[in-house]
Amino acid sequence: MARPIDFYFDFSSPYSYLGAQLIEPLAARHGRSVTWRPVLLGAIFKVSGMAPLTEIPLKGDYSRVDFARSARFHGLPYRHPEPFPISTVNTARAMLWWLAEAPARAPDFARGALQAFFVENRPINDPAEIGRLTAELGGDAPALLAALQAPALKERLRAAVDEAVARGVFGAPFFFVDDEPFWGQDRLPQIARWLAEGPY
Amino acid sequence: MARPIDFYFDFSSPYSYLGAQLIEPLAARHGRSVTWRPVLLGAIFKVSGMAPLTEIPLKGDYSRVDFARSARFHGLPYRHPEPFPISTVNTARAMLWWLAEAPARAPDFARGALQAFFVENRPINDPAEIGRLTAELGGDAPALLAALQAPALKERLRAAVDEAVARGVFGAPFFFVDDEPFWGQDRLPQIARWLAEGPY
Image 1 (cartoon, rainbow over the protein chains, first blue to last red):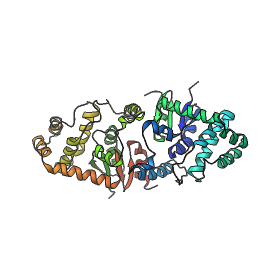
Image 2 (tube, rainbow over the protein chains, first blue to last red; image 1 turned 45 degrees about the vertical axis):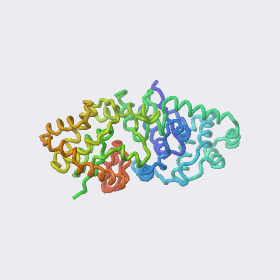
Image 3 (tube, rainbow over the protein chains, first blue to last red; image 1 turned 90 degrees about the horizontal axis):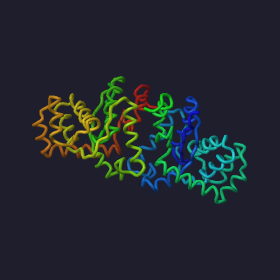
Image 4 (tube, each protein chain N blue to C red; image 1 turned 120 degrees about the horizontal axis):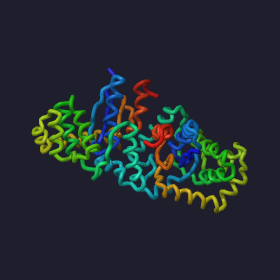
């Protein structure tokens, strides 16, 4: 049985939104599943010394052009949210709850939240919004909102970020295919070749 | 007549080496020419606050994997040079000399120097190496080496870097197609679509 693709993503990352839309169909074409791994780029940037794209002189202006054009290139809707970036600590914890409580629907929650932010510009870190997204998917919103207050999910997210950094994750989306690292939605063609032909 | 593609590149940039191999055939398929514009990432990073890829924690280790794999993906040879990165101020000035003195052969000089560094690991910023590459292409090596000592080329390179920054160039390779900015060799698929279909 071929190993799942590890997909590290951040809920405030435009390229993660694109990756979340594109990785499952690509994996499925090659008989692979996807393991969804939410992380917090803000915490990871403390290790790497990097800054959010839009805050870097020159690169920030370009990135806004590239977010929208890359979405159009893939035929996906995109409306740049303001404020941006935002904290997504609650959203990431909620994703861990979904992964534990109803793993089969967790990818739907992730895609739903990413679309809510990057298409509808909704405040996806607000518990009320997280409750709405959860209820729409038939999840137990009161249970999730209670879990967001408890220490267990906080600990689990901290451990998830530490694990990602230990594995070398410095940005998002970040993929591992058979332990080979691929950073960025623009590496999907390289991933496709790896899935089709194996290591190169 | 369709406008040339502006191709900004740095002689110490692995992705510029890949871009230099790939952009001319792509442009030619769509009836476009390429304007080669050498820059110095070191000078540009002073504006953006960015650092060389290989010096960033976590990202540095990944970048070495990605340089080599991206080359294999495109079927191009690659041997990571050490030391890396290097100053390429003489190489970039030499390219400006070629562009002024023998523009039709200037792309050959650029590709030759990039290959000398990223495949043969030669010290391409050394005047002796620049003279050798120039002579191999039938250029007037003594004239070039004399010009490297004079202030004109230094001024011209400084102006070229300033112009690039004013246009928003923060990395390399950087392309403008009909004034639309594209950063990175991994944007070549997006450029291909733009060339085939126009703005999207």
